Length: 330
Ligand code: TRP
Image (cartoon, rainbow, N blue to C red):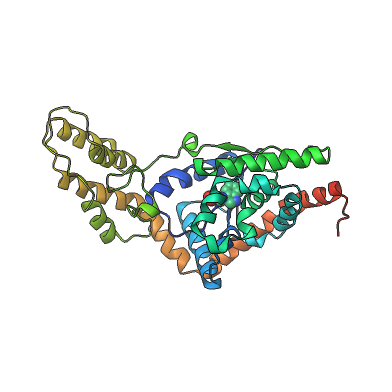
């Protein structure tokens, strides 16, 4: 069976955009492939977080993914730093990763500009660590967003280079595939802007209480001018309908479409309905989240089981790599 792998940056809480985008496609993938999903806590060291910071953000995101339905019985779910085999492969890959090509990576240049006092070697070799994450399980497919395409090209390059250098076919060339083709949906923001995103500040989080969700939805931008019969919807209104199509029943959507078409739509009514349907759709996740967060032992157990499975696969790859390079296995 083909191996699918993806890394999750532990940056804050999941919002509706994450859920109906990446998470939904992960849920589908775990049914169809041999999946590895991990929390990329080593990668986060490039910005020097505190120890508490590291601990908490890994746990938060693990609990949220489990609450969404990522299933440790179906997929291997682990924390990157629990699988030290990755770093040994990172070292080998770094020996044939060249300064020039690493310096040319756009996200390196951007981060170097953003944190000029902390242009560390980890930042430079971020693509090698990411390649090691992927190659340590000899993954075939990696669901990623567009922003990761350059890192994926580097991973393919490092994979080919290793194979050529040692005249082997040990590593498959990992293919990126788009989450939208795997059931992911792009969720618009509530401020009329294109996309729901943490940096945009227009998010509904899965951990938001119903009262908070109601408040956020009621504040959504709808100032769209007068309606005319059967006219195309302005973007802010189209966005509300997009969200509604995701969380509400067909009947509800049709009802409000009708209202729009005969110019009797009251945005307040639509938003009230939308808020309730978002709350209903996300309630089970919220309930499971409370449960996971009240059982730190359970989270630990899941992480331990994931790490064991991941290390089994990783050490099998690593022992082949060591033999190929000329090291003996201990
Ligand atoms: N770089 C990815 C991101 O920023 C996270 C990541 C780390 C990753 N290692 C990976 C993704 C391996 C896919 C495969 O989102």
